[in-house]
Each structure stands twice: as C-alpha cells, then as structure tokens.
Figure 1 (cartoon, each protein chain N blue to C red):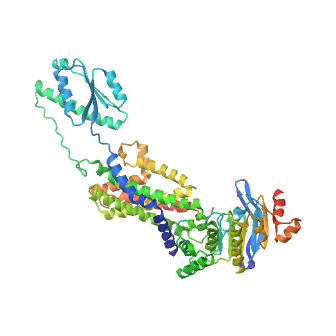
Figure 2 (figure 1 turned 90 degrees about the vertical axis):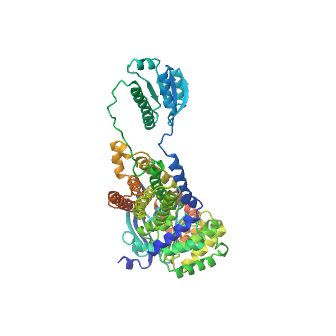
Figure 3 (figure 1 turned 60 degrees about the vertical axis):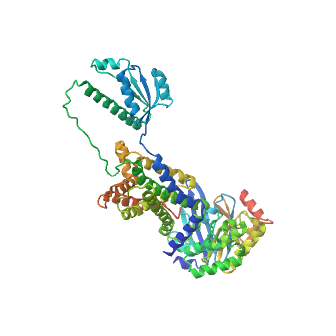
Length: 246
Length: 370
C-alpha cells in the first residue's frame, strides 16, 4: 500500500517530469518532504516552481514520474489528495465582493464543514487575525496584509495536514511578512506540513529545509545552515546567487 | 448536494451585489422590447417619389394624381430632367422616379401601347420590391380605368377578385411578429453572456484555481454555477411575457405552461453553450468575442428578421443546428397560433437533444486539471 510506505512522508516525488511541448519545465525532480516540516521551494522566476506545485496540488498532470501526496497517489487518488491539502496561490483566492464571513462560509461549505463548524471558524479567524473592524466590509476593502493572512486561513479552513503556499508573501511589507510567517509557524507547530515557494531569501532561513531549483532541476536540497556551509556563503541569498548563476 | 447550495448562495450574493446586474436584468428586456419591436420593421410607410411628366397632358396628369392620392407615395420632387432627379436619388432624397414620356397622351388616344418608366432605388432589394408592387398596382388601376372609359373592350370578362384574410395577425402588426422572437433573443443573450462571462471572470481573478484544488465535484460546480443564471433568464422571460401581454397587447394564444416548460429546456442549452465558451476563453474579452460570433450568426439566420424560407439552401441547412431558430419558431407558433404540444413536438425534441449535447460537451470540455 502506498499509504504505509509513506507514513512519515508528506510528499514523495520521484523522477517527476513535466514538459510543455519541447520545453522541459520540471526535469526529473526527486525529493521528499517530512511530515510537520516547513519545506522551502526556491528558485528564480521561470525555474519551474509553480509548475511543480501545481502538479502536487492536482491542478496539472505530470508528464511522467511518481508523485505521492499525503500518502495518496497523484494519478489514482486525486480526490483524496484534495481533501488533505490546502493551497494558496500568488493570485488572490478570496472573492473581493464577498465579506470575510461569506468567504469563509463558501470555502468551508465546499469542504463539507458543518454550519456550526463554519461559524466557529469565522469567529476564530476574526479574533485571531484582528479583523473585528472589518466584519461588515467586503474583502476588497481589506489592507493587503490582512487579505493575505485571511487567504491563508481560508486555505486551511478544513484543517488539512499539508499546506502548499505559492509565493504567499509577494508584495507585502516586511512587518506583515513577519506576521505571516508567525502564522505559518503556528500551523507547523500543530503538526501541519508547510510547502512554500518564495523569492525572499530571508524567508528561506525560516524553513527547516530548502530546495533550490535552477532551469527545471533541483540543484541543492538541505537545511539552510548546511547549504550555507557547503557553498561557503554568509547568507541564503549568496547560496542562491551562486547556484542561479550556474 | 450541499456543495451546490453553497455555490448558488455565493453566486446570488455576488450577482445582486454587482451594480450592473439589476439594470441588465430589468432594463435590457424593456429596452429590447420597446426599441426592437417598434424599430425593427420592414413595413414601408411611404415612398418618396420623383415625377418627370414630359407630356403634361390630361392623361399624364390623371396618372400623376393617382400617385399623389395614394397614401403610400409622397411626391418629393418634380422635374423635366432625368439627370436632376437621378441626382436626387443619388442623395437618397427620392426613392422612386416615375417617368412619363412626351407622347403619352397621343399614343394612348391612338390605342398604341405606351411605355412609362419606373426607376427604383434598389440598394435595399426587399424594399425595392415592395415599392415596385405599390407603384405597379397604381398603374394597373389606371389602366383598368382607361379600359372602362374607352369601352373598346366588351367588359364581360369578369376579373377574378381576391379577398385576403390575414390569420393569426389580422392587423398585419409587425410587433406581433417580432415580439416572440425578441423574447427569445433576450433570454439567449442573458443566458449566454452572463454564464460565459461569469466563469471566465473566476479564471481571470484566479479563484477558479482555488476551487480546483478543493474536492468539489465537476458536476456540482457546473450545476451551482449555472442554476442562478437559469433562474435569472427564466425570470426575464416571464417579465418579457408580461410586458408583451399587458404593454404591447400581443395575444398569447397558446399555453404559458408549454412556453415555460420548453424555455426551461432551451435555457439548459444556452447555458451549456455559455459554459462551453468559458472553457475556450481565458479572458472576459475573448469570451465576449466568441459569444458575439455565435449570437450574431445564429440570430441573423434564425428567422427573427427575415423568413428562413427565403434563405439559400445552405443557410437553411445551417439552421438545422441553430437553436435560436427552433425556439423562435416555437414561440411564434405557440404565442400567435396557439400551437399545442403535438404541433411543436419536433421543436421540443430538437431543443432537448441540443440541450443534452451542449451541456455534455461543455461538461466534458471543462477541466479541473490541465
């Protein structure tokens, strides 16, 4: 059983290839993500990060290779995977013309949460994110930072064991980014696996392990401290630049 | 099932929060009915006539007087020069020229055949035909009077008299003919555009991706998305029928229940096409263009403005797959002629088959995973 094999692993990827015509976006990717880990998925623009994350979330078909997420096979058990993951993309996933409560109700309803549970979650999020002043407003009136934190919370409204975040902190100020990462840490502390792509190298330092993708291949994968040692670098930024330059 | 209700609830919230939506739902039907029903007419009220009477005789004046007396002709210009009136026609000030040659009276008195000329602006061929018919009937009438006056022929040939009665639309009111078709146009446009654009909008703002990572079932999503627009279009049809009956006094001879029943199937068809378009387009702009492409062709071929029977064979063949044509024909038959289920069963079966086809094709094309 695939489930037994991957008991301690949240994600297993073997020889994953994704081609668009003759362009190879993902070139034989191999990696595993442990349960409860914060896994940073780094790479320059166009390195193939989003392509890979979309395959893991079941939004896109792989060309070849084995992918196992939350113990389920991406080819045969796509629906089970979807019940067990949360996903937040660089684009906003909230409806601007709905209120906070209406957004939570909609996504909660789709994940099959009970009305009572949805009410609880709504109250919890408004409290936790300090959104009391915005309960009557539409999401479009929220400041960007609040929107992002709310989008993250809505993405995990069904309490999935694994969360995929695709550049979740694009375009927000450093303070909000810090707050956002506090949210991520809280969820990780509850045992959730966090799979996150980012451009910000300071964020890479927050991860338990990071992989760095260059031109569709994973060039490095380890703890940030070990990577810095290996590449004789002061910061993750230096590591990244060394690798990305080739 | 609960998932569907959550989607429907969300859609209705968004629809009624959109400030453009209520005008679209209420104002479009009123405008379409008011403007199209009155303006889109092929009736020719009168013809602007130019007269060249080179004869200036008793007989020629009698003919001219006949034209002047006719309610269909307005004498706009008189001249002795064909060139001058040609210019008037060029500038669209006259639509038809009556040319009476100089020897008109003489030839008539000598019992020779005599020729007059009618020149018609035929840019609009259909209108030209009608103008010609009007003019010829006056000339014919003039001719008959001549015969009677001259008494040269024994008038024992009883001419055949035709008495016309116009069924289903006794006053030959163009509105009666147009309104059932305009109602179809209305629900088609509302259904097609609103549903197509709505789903593409979710693509544009990226929420469709968020939905695609949820375990939502494809058919739940589609039912939830299309149901609100089904209700809105049904409401608009009902609203339009009320306007037709009480504001335009269009007789609704057939069964309203039958109309509602077939409309409910027809809308599935239209929404299916809307969904299909949304699977082809990435932006609302693209969706708009594709939708217009379908709508314009289907409407022009549908028989809304011109009878399908007058179209070339190949166009009639295309109409076999034109859903709008079936529904317009159905609406006219039921509203104006009081057709019953059995009379329109062919229409109903065709619409049902296309509804199944369009919704299945769209569902098949709609992909959660790319």
